[in-house]
Image (cartoon, rainbow, N blue to C red):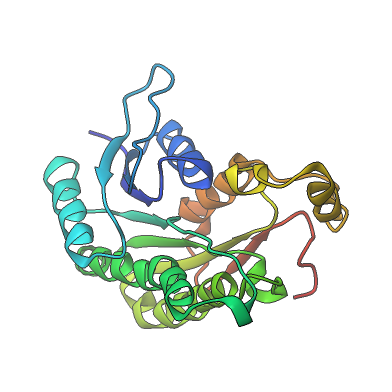
Length: 240
């Protein structure tokens, strides 16, 4: 079988699903994790290997990787796209709501990256790509938990990049801006218009815009890039 083995966490919808479909179209053998709903079956290509996995649970992560390795082989590319929001002003935010977002977005990324790493180091090659957010460096009222988790991913990635570069493994981050996904669909027209007015390119990103950046970072052409933070935000975070 040709193509590398790719695992995309949170790959049942939105950005994660777009990454999975694009990498599959490029010839990779792709598996996705999901926590509630499996990805839809689309097109004439082979179905994605769908693995139920709650990244908040180490046992789920271990089981998902074990099934992946038995079915396709060790992951050569990992895209950490699993994430949640739980917005609210800090004065009204419980400790559970704050830590819950970090547990999924940041600690979940730690679990996935750690489980993927040993086979990559043995093979002396591998790509780890984390999906953070423009909110990591701009901040956003009502998202102290989300922004903290996404900023933490950048520090995590750059530290890990230094640890594993000598063994041929790269670690990079993509920071999407405003993406046309279910999260934004919940906003009314005036809210969407106000957000859109802050984007120099004047449009929302499509999930495939983010997936294109992920495909590049996974490609041979990005072999000399590690510790990179690549914005896909239409200029929203320009200068940060």
